[in-house]
Image 1: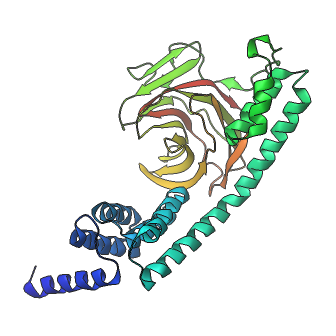
Image 2: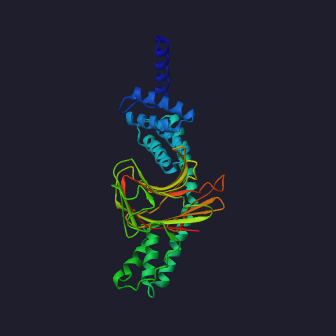
Image 3: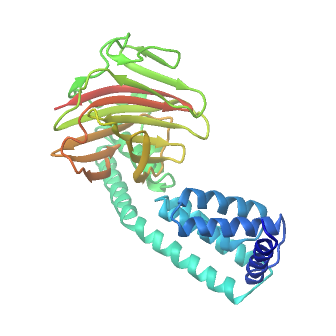
Length: 363
């Protein structure tokens, strides 16, 4: 770097340091350098690089609400609203708990508050649906608690999965007889064609391996570390209008990169769709084109218990994909091409042990 360039760099740091509060911990000059780097990446729409630099700046300097606010804006661009809300809260908390009070920080706290309110409104419709679902479950349980206690138990467990602290559901559940003494509800007949027909997985690639096993139509995948493993149905099985369902539950909690679910489509064009449950208790819909992911949507699994079995259902009709998770609609998306979802099907596990049951296709 030339002497003139170095002097300009120092001047930029001095200008930035004058806009905020004095450092209370960490390497202040390096943190501000990272902040400038993050701001440039954000303006250039390189949001992944911006996120990395903002986080490093926050690790170097406390408080640094400007970096927390910038991180919130970046995470919004990356379609991660829950993480963005956490960043905006950090921004406000650092300002509110600091002994330093400047007009710039006061304005920044107000902007963070408005951003939080905007994101909360995005979830208000979903929360309204959740409340209606819980009320319906309670009504159903009260109606059948005497004649069909097993059905009532299922309804109450569904309500508590959405609202774990619901006192009425908890009280009714404790009043029900033990499951072994209750008359069991008849199990509806499974619909569609089973896609796992044997204990050898002859139609799958790689089939049985060190990570994959199968017994009586139940497939188990156990993968250590962040390198995920796929098991493909060898021949194309999906085309036109179809529905795929699978029941999933964790056998091993796994690590921070825990991810599991389905790949579908492809159609010979290397354009796959993924429906994956992450360690953040989110269901994400991504599209892989040429091996690179393109995030589409995310859906927060409120009250999600990975130890229980959960049902994932994907329905394609006239080029439109509708996804339900435990009977709750998560996504609805129309593809550019009516054949975009044609192709094969795969099970996916990363950094966890997962059991897949009742995997079926219906046309």
